[in-house]
Image (cartoon, rainbow, N blue to C red; front, side, top):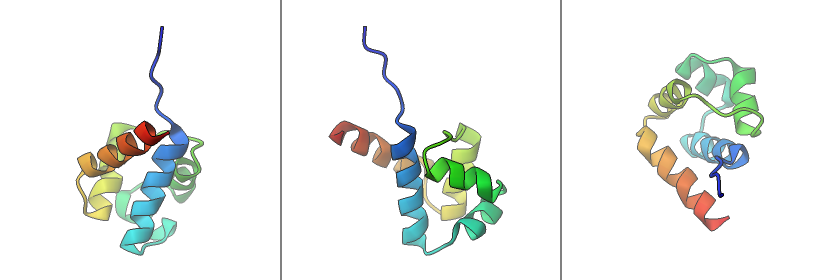
Length: 80
């Protein structure tokens, strides 16, 4: 039986890519999203998966819809 798994590396890469496109550092994004910089760093490295709440905070701080981030994650996972 196939059990789908969310690839934490892809999640982190997508978040990091959107952050870089916005032109902000991890320090700035973590402050804007009210999460610790080390937590954000762990997410971007694929060591941790963000909760929906954390993903929502990050998307708001980046001024993009959370659905845009999720769509990009799904796209990259389909390409894998």
